[in-house]
Image (tube, rainbow, N blue to C red):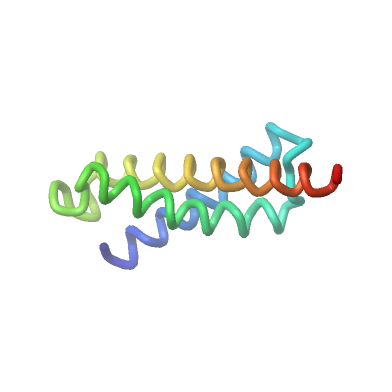
Length: 95
Protein backbone atom coordinates (compact mmCIF):
# COMPACT_ATOMS: atom_id res chain seq x y z
CA UNK A 1 0.00 0.00 0.00
CA UNK A 2 1.23 3.46 -0.82
CA UNK A 3 0.09 6.95 0.16
CA UNK A 4 -1.96 7.42 -3.03
CA UNK A 5 -4.00 4.32 -2.21
CA UNK A 6 -4.63 5.50 1.33
CA UNK A 7 -5.68 8.96 0.15
CA UNK A 8 -8.12 7.45 -2.35
CA UNK A 9 -9.63 5.29 0.38
CA UNK A 10 -9.93 8.16 2.88
CA UNK A 11 -11.43 10.62 0.40
CA UNK A 12 -13.91 8.11 -0.99
CA UNK A 13 -14.77 7.09 2.57
CA UNK A 14 -15.54 10.69 3.48
CA UNK A 15 -17.75 11.00 0.41
CA UNK A 16 -19.42 7.67 1.18
CA UNK A 17 -20.10 8.72 4.76
CA UNK A 18 -21.71 11.97 3.66
CA UNK A 19 -23.77 10.27 0.96
CA UNK A 20 -25.01 7.67 3.45
CA UNK A 21 -25.80 10.42 5.97
CA UNK A 22 -27.73 12.32 3.33
CA UNK A 23 -29.71 9.26 2.31
CA UNK A 24 -30.49 8.13 5.86
CA UNK A 25 -31.35 11.32 7.74
CA UNK A 26 -32.23 9.42 10.92
CA UNK A 27 -28.69 7.98 11.11
CA UNK A 28 -26.85 11.15 10.11
CA UNK A 29 -24.21 12.47 12.50
CA UNK A 30 -24.02 15.92 10.91
CA UNK A 31 -21.55 16.91 8.23
CA UNK A 32 -18.45 16.69 10.42
CA UNK A 33 -19.53 13.41 12.05
CA UNK A 34 -20.42 11.88 8.70
CA UNK A 35 -17.07 12.91 7.28
CA UNK A 36 -15.05 11.58 10.22
CA UNK A 37 -16.94 8.28 10.35
CA UNK A 38 -16.55 7.99 6.59
CA UNK A 39 -12.81 8.62 6.70
CA UNK A 40 -12.27 5.92 9.33
CA UNK A 41 -14.64 3.51 7.57
CA UNK A 42 -13.04 4.22 4.21
CA UNK A 43 -9.56 3.45 5.49
CA UNK A 44 -10.64 0.27 7.25
CA UNK A 45 -12.98 -0.86 4.46
CA UNK A 46 -10.36 -0.24 1.80
CA UNK A 47 -7.76 -2.21 3.72
CA UNK A 48 -10.13 -5.13 4.25
CA UNK A 49 -11.07 -5.16 0.57
CA UNK A 50 -7.40 -5.02 -0.40
CA UNK A 51 -6.60 -8.02 1.80
CA UNK A 52 -9.61 -10.06 0.72
CA UNK A 53 -9.07 -9.60 -3.00
CA UNK A 54 -5.28 -9.15 -2.82
CA UNK A 55 -5.47 -6.18 -5.17
CA UNK A 56 -2.21 -4.60 -4.06
CA UNK A 57 -0.12 -7.08 -6.02
CA UNK A 58 -2.27 -7.38 -9.11
CA UNK A 59 -2.46 -3.87 -10.45
CA UNK A 60 -0.42 -1.03 -9.19
CA UNK A 61 -1.61 2.24 -7.85
CA UNK A 62 -2.40 3.84 -11.22
CA UNK A 63 -4.30 0.97 -12.82
CA UNK A 64 -7.90 2.17 -13.43
CA UNK A 65 -9.44 -1.06 -12.14
CA UNK A 66 -7.33 -0.81 -8.98
CA UNK A 67 -8.35 2.80 -8.40
CA UNK A 68 -12.02 1.94 -8.95
CA UNK A 69 -11.74 -0.92 -6.45
CA UNK A 70 -10.25 1.44 -3.85
CA UNK A 71 -12.97 4.04 -4.46
CA UNK A 72 -15.74 1.48 -4.09
CA UNK A 73 -14.14 -0.12 -1.03
CA UNK A 74 -13.58 3.21 0.67
CA UNK A 75 -17.02 4.56 -0.15
CA UNK A 76 -18.84 1.45 0.98
CA UNK A 77 -16.69 1.19 4.11
CA UNK A 78 -17.46 4.80 4.99
CA UNK A 79 -21.18 4.32 4.47
CA UNK A 80 -21.27 1.10 6.47
CA UNK A 81 -19.39 2.55 9.44
CA UNK A 82 -21.62 5.64 9.45
CA UNK A 83 -24.70 3.39 9.46
CA UNK A 84 -23.36 1.33 12.36
CA UNK A 85 -22.40 4.38 14.43
CA UNK A 86 -25.70 6.13 13.67
CA UNK A 87 -27.72 3.06 14.67
CA UNK A 88 -25.77 2.70 17.94
CA UNK A 89 -26.22 6.41 18.68
CA UNK A 90 -29.97 6.19 18.06
CA UNK A 91 -30.28 3.06 20.22
CA UNK A 92 -28.40 4.73 23.07
CA UNK A 93 -30.56 7.88 22.81
CA UNK A 94 -33.75 5.84 23.25
CA UNK A 95 -32.65 4.30 26.55
